[in-house]
Amino acid sequence: MLPVHYRAAVVTGFLLAWSCLPALAGSRAVPAGERPSLGAADAPVTIVVFSDYQCMFCKAFAVERLPEIKRDFIDTGKVRLVSRDFPLRRHPRARPAAAAAACADRQDRYWGMHEILFAHQDRFSDEQLRSYAAELELDMESFDRCLADPTVEARIDEDLAVVRQARISGTPAFLIGVERDGIISGTLIIGFQPSSVFAAEINEYLEPDPE
Image (cartoon, helix red, strand yellow):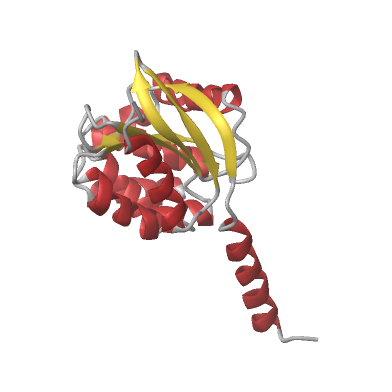
């Protein structure tokens, strides 16, 4: 039998290979909503990311793919990326982490908290979440009041309702498409994918319709 560390490496390699299988899940439409975003509001393509802060593949996207998409498409004005929460039931600290990010958003530090949470994915106690807020130099009294505010939980529940309506089954998930009248319609992609999958789908929506 293989040593434990070899078996773990084999399992990890299998999971990573499985996560990168192309997973186009058909057309979907979701409301744009008021959520944290990167990029120009009038960008021709919108990506809605549904993620869980305890999901290893969500972290892989945030660390590896998001910087590429930001460089090639967001910073060039082609794409706006919107973040929504999808805390899975099997990840008990994903929801408190999402609440911490929402409260950081109230102080305009969402993306800073987003980065810290994925960097410390296995350390989400209440005390640790507060320490991340302090690291971002947030107003701690306001942060604590926010965590106790029922509208924060309602915001996460609203995202979960969108997940159910769009029949999204796993994380990370990405809706890539166009926004019209507050509705984003496009193609749903499930899982951590190669850069080429994201680029191909984005370019599909960037190309003008043939006359």
